[in-house]
Image 1 (cartoon, rainbow, N blue to C red):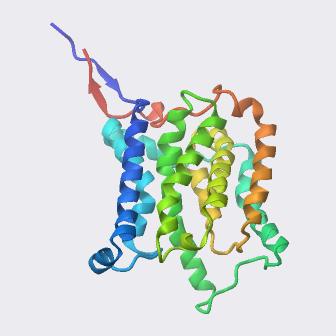
Image 2 (tube, rainbow, N blue to C red; image 1 turned 120 degrees about the vertical axis):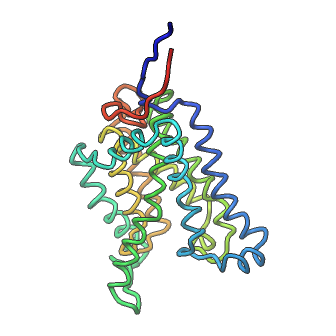
Image 3 (tube, one colour; image 1 turned 180 degrees about the vertical axis):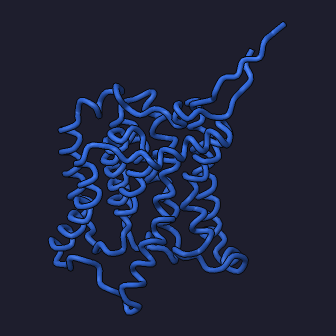
Length: 283
């Protein structure tokens, strides 16, 4: 008589990357594409698109939604709880905390000063309170992407390639994923140039990689990293912020070349095995 063996599903299979890409691009490009190709109908049905529109949030959250749905599908509720436990992985080399908290603001300030701008973004007529409110709103915008990019894609890719290449591939996908927004009226991207933005995406994805691995696959640190990048208090430093970050990334990759070009020590678990996940039936 065959016995029932309960085995914890502690990891997503690598082929989940395909579903992640399809869900991520499918959700975002469908929402944005509707406003690009059918602007009048979309606006009449859902309202004019803007950075605070619910559908804009949906499009932005697509990587996170895809990541969470895959974890739930393969790991169940227990797996999802274990996945969210990565939000509490905060221990890493102190230099990375210093870079997130101090280094990123310095990059924006330096870039702004080089182009003759201010140290901080101008306070709007609504006052500092409005900027603080916007800052906290941003916490629930871009950083939510990290449930997908770093939550699922990065560890799965690092099973098969060195962290540097995993970061570069995610950065490439991240940049292309944003492309339709550059053709969308009513959002910030319509006034930006895509190529520098794309280079910036690849640079940032590579730069966050050693932080991610130093913190054992943390979700917290990449989310804080992402939040700092869109903090409304930091001044407009384009294009110098990207140029400075490229130089910083080159230095970081060189100093961490042993770990960036080796899979040894790279975080590869989507669902931490120590917490377990939903069981599955085997023989």
